Length: 243
Image (cartoon, rainbow, N blue to C red; front, side, top):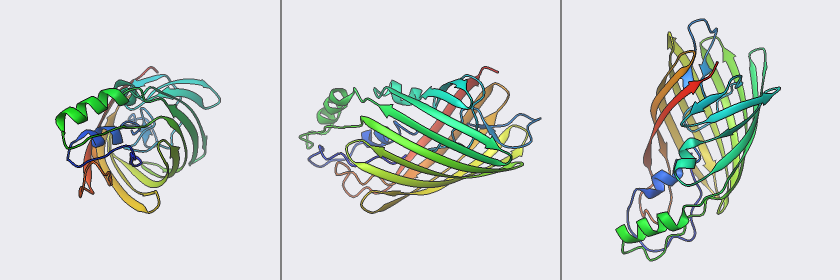
């Protein structure tokens, strides 16, 4: 998922840390053989939320969630937690025949500013100041259409960290053999302009175990990475659903 610019970054140099930060809030398609359509273990695609109802507790890298009632769950991203960005969210989803509706909100409190600043400034002497700010709320909504083995969806996401941004992403998943699915995403981030993003991957998911690998292409437009407009971020997900 694309992140906003960090105005506190000064100087010039190249490093990979913005790629890690861009994946903090980002960021496993699965369906059992007896499922009539695509199902995700963690209700995540690559960098977007999947149009799916979470009906059982799940522990995963992209999402750990605990269902409450009537489609409402409390969740967190273990990826972001491990990268010093503790976060907590609420997500509601409803299935109406082939239609899927999802609404969610999350708050992230970034506690790793000094750690990342020390790393960057020690590795890149040309950068005199680096102050990442990734604390703030985010909100998203997803509409999905389940057509047997095929899932189509569209997501709108708004967040406010250092600055506001708004993104729109379309996603598709195809269950092609047993528990295996292809997944793809394409979208645009609106932040005083436009920045495209794309992603593709493959997912495996059984009744309990979920696994996903892929890659996303994100425009990072960060002053600390001069001239570097495109970054490739790997996607890895491993989850267990307690059905």
